[in-house]
Image (cartoon, rainbow, N blue to C red; front, side, top):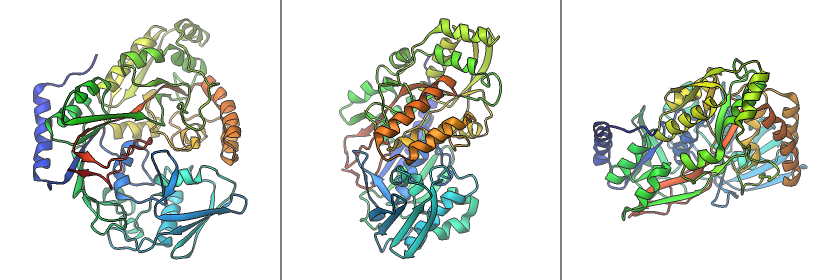
Length: 498
């Protein structure tokens, strides 16, 4: 079931990487990713893989540490007042963007407002509670909310809090993603689609020059190619590592593999705006065919956890009351019969990669037991995202890397018009519950609200939750200083190649 690459294709891939690595500086790190980042613009990005690159280019207002605690970054301190409606940030001073533009309160104000207003911005929902952003002086930013919004700091630790150069963004307009300019430890140099993204160290970085001279990111959708490049020395880091390759890396005396719990979820979206999944009974039937335990064992070799909903164990909103759905083919057949559709054909959209191929084939086999006829269509990841956003699909394999605050794992996915609501799901009662949870301060109260919402969402089945994945990173043992944060983003500012 696993796709096997020919020896020639492996050699060609290794040769291409080696040619770049050979011309790079001695302390340039080459990183193998599982996809080519689609959009290097904080406002427009919807892909996890984008964040791997953007976190090196852009500083954020705040960040999160290994315990997912919000910590200072550009904002050295903050206070909350006005009954939770006013957030006042005091900024570090003397910071400059790579183009020389000062990073001051005006730049922060511009970036947040850009995220709120830019056409096509995926950040609008995250920042919908913001009433206004002001900059009373160069070192102070004040965010005033319409209603209390507990997730704000967590949201600002990600793309909504990334600060772009106003000079570069205004000049580039819609093309900013092709030449992103931030104030981070590394600066964008160039990219060749489906080949490489090259960054160089920012020598004037305000927290001190990085130890690395630069980073080259290479996309390898197929896990066989990723691990082959790591084993050959053509790359020094790969993420993720396919489960079958973990033991191979562990046996190599020059390599390490790190596996740590993630905060996201994986599964299958069903397009509720068109047949066959505009019928709730058909959606319920498909969800009932999926054996989550078998998925863990067969595809992931017991390295993931079956998913009950969007909140993995160990995250703040996890609730044992939300149980993993048990596969029930008989019930699935009954649902299809009730829908008057004993046989249902549909196309399952997925992106390249051996794991994705095996997973799609397993979904196909499981669904066929109940009467579904599943055609698998594989497209490049950026194309998959575009089709998902435009609702141009029947069902699509697409997950989420997760956010520190639970709002980031549910609101945009199931609220009407949410930026990640690829199903086209729209239920006013769910909207009200998700808005209520945003305004609640106590996590116990939020969990209770989420559980009510999830009861309805799981019954409606616009999304079939299948598993909670782990973060896996393969690297050379000479790499030091890499912090492993549960959000899965590799931060290379403090790393070195000894």
